[in-house]
Image 1 (spheres, one colour):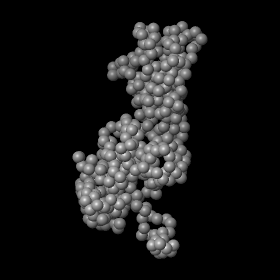
Image 2 (cartoon, one colour):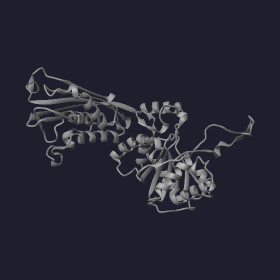
Image 3 (cartoon, one colour):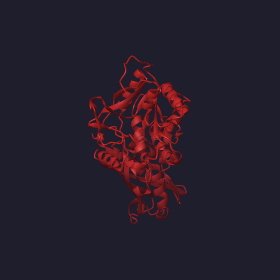
Image 4 (cartoon, helix red, strand yellow):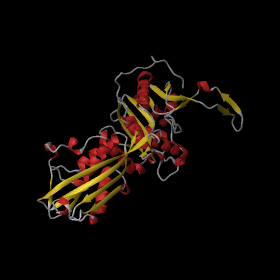
Length: 410
């Protein structure tokens, strides 16, 4: 793949670009119970990291992910989290085929319903691409029509003779290790894939190689050494260790209290619990979710619930408190955070919380998008002391533990 002249191809400088993420493989060499794109490194799946990295590029309008039909549930959980902060970025997924080439072709046909001018084809197993690399890819496709990222080869490469243990040493100065995302004008690469399929050729593992077979000159632009592909268990171990070395752990404290009033139920952790009284509050008065919301915001250093949802704003009158907690969770995710643990205590003489504990934990875990094992809910009385002891109200306190990138310092 030799670079070609920058005058060889030119399309609109404001060309609409979309990404096609190939995530239909089984990734058996990586080991584990799940395909490698759904395995976690530092608390987030490889696929989700790749999508979020693509989303950071300002000139990338949308992305479509090609999935295996057996992975739909795993994918939809990831897509739901992405859509919390990037609604409209992910298009409905395409279902892949038996080969990478067939999967790419399925994604291209799905994109053809509203075709972009430029498509970036990216392997889900490369989660560390930067927005700068994405922008270089888009620009390379805009100028050249077909372009792939490449990095210098540091090791000496020796080409062995067929069936023999000796051969020829290749000049590494002219060699490049090719990565993804590979960028093309959409019409050209779609046509090339269609021609390859019509010719019965299904062995291409690289879209640049397929494009060259179709007679398209492919430009090589600067890749990134950090844009590594995860294939083996050792790759995952190194990636996990590297990511965890770039994070810090933060905690936040939350507290809320509400007086009892007329009514026949209280809301706790998103669960409706029968009681002889109701709650006096601007919203639904869920003290547990209010305390958890403030705990998350505190860990983020992002104000408090009253700043984001002021009682003076009529939009929040009688609002479900899960909306407040969902917003705090979304803010954590937007900053690359991971909720490690939520611990809360409800303080009241009544209602009794114990019989509802499991339902409350499940509700909180579902809203936060974490396992129930990361949520602790306790209850206590104040030994009939103070306003809670006199049965005048209910209180809750919470601690949230988050893992955040070091970039959040300051």
